[in-house]
Length: 437
Image (cartoon, rainbow, N blue to C red; front, side, top):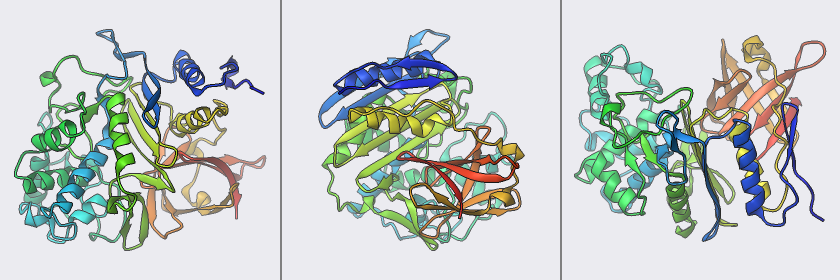
């Protein structure tokens, strides 16, 4: 018997209807998201070689009235890391790079002899974790290249944030440096490296590296709303690749043909233990792999299951609501299998500004019998994984924290006495409530 999937949003109800194939249900669900102002962008869902849904919503550029389509290139933000890691490991396989050799072998101007390529790909290099670290050294309006930022580190004698290899600290800049190292090893420029070894090789016709200045943009630029990306960014590797949803799907499906023994599919490690990311910069849980990017108004996700051969890709430019980041994927997977999506309801969580970090520190027992260990240092919040790695939790939206390296979002609810009594933990694969252990 076919059932109806009901999606309440702030008291409003819309029904997908009774369908026996996933394509109409998926289309209706994204139509509903768009109609409620929750999704502008493009989605491509495929199973094996068959495309189940490919559709665009809203405008890529509102001012120029350019519609968003599956072929519209948009800012993929941190998804650039998956391309960078793939190029680096390919050059390692060609014996042109060595993961455990000092980066200074190819980049002598980097003033840190202890950093290796493995440290860069594992987010354990100690290089700046935030580009704001360069603001006091680089004049406003300067086009920032990776070469300029590396030179700044040397000239200003900037200390590392940690001893290389000891801890996980998410660093997009580390991937910019990895891309520059790969270009040096290949005896080419970063632009040519990506054009030849990634975009041309895999037939990614929409993809390009964004120019440093908006004034030099080729054609009409896809913009982010209400917050657009920044001008004067010319560093590449950790971000700043523009690509369409259709080409991200094409890129994603190339991994179905790779051997499961590919060393890049193994989880990276730091001294504390195994991290949540593989060396190819994918989150992994069994046969499922995914990665996401978020920058200002842009959000993108690429997911695949190598057992079912499902590929799920979406890109948005309308500042996707934090509570939807994971829910979209979980709902699409349910619809793809003929089930029902999750109700579009915000979990009722306490305002983060009202929370004190120390009252959150505890081991929380979740509904699926796993645990979530939260630690604090002053106002800062951290998560300690089951493998022993400590991750910084960053504020997200008004009620949640987000953990790069685990792709975990969590927030808290108070009981009738005002005590922080429950935690809500969300990942791409599940959402669970938990209580103090």
